[in-house]
Image 1 (cartoon, helix red, strand yellow):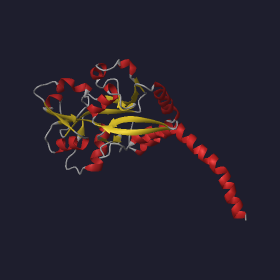
Image 2 (image 1 turned 135 degrees about the vertical axis):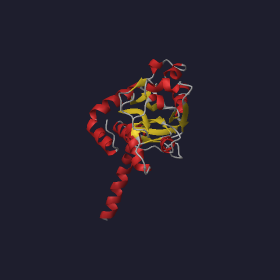
Image 3 (image 1 turned 60 degrees about the vertical axis):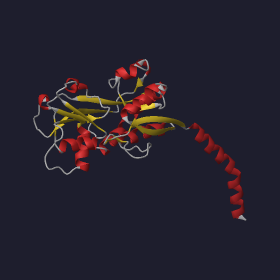
Image 4 (image 1 turned 90 degrees about the vertical axis):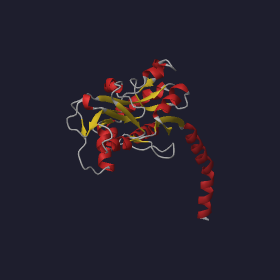
Length: 258
């Protein structure tokens, strides 16, 4: 008898539980975040076969933010140049990450008033520059120069425009580092954190690789951008301040120093 009474009580409350479940489902808001389909760990890895595979510090950070506000962020990986097109021209993604006002400004301006693109405060600032097998290489000695396709080497535009320099673009970071280790290029353009992380994780070095701190470097700030959702960018900025302790722990977990 007690068991029947218990079942009857549960049945009475079942409609309320279902209603609560439905309301919670409706309150979750779905957004698509366009991200790069490359491995750029520890910051992010979108190189999986599935366009929705996305890992690393950035995924953890953005998911934590979404959970705080009952959002659902769907990550969609795309080649870097196509990602700009889907964000600015076709408007198929709600947010782009990472982004920066200094990246491809002329392309953005050809499709939209750039003032309509709203950027967050930086999530990280990474030092990006030249790595070489030569400990004290000079700019003039970079007669072959490689970078990931779609990247913007801001401090090295004269080098990029020098017709005597062989320029090579790679699909990913692993291929970029392999070109250097096989001595097919003199210099590569890469983040110091990304270089160190990948060398330790994927390569058995027979000789050292040197990040050239004495040469110009770019401080690349990673920002979240949106055209249609400035209110969410504002919330994200608040989140970066209010969750500073948790974000610092995430950075430590992924060996990010800045």
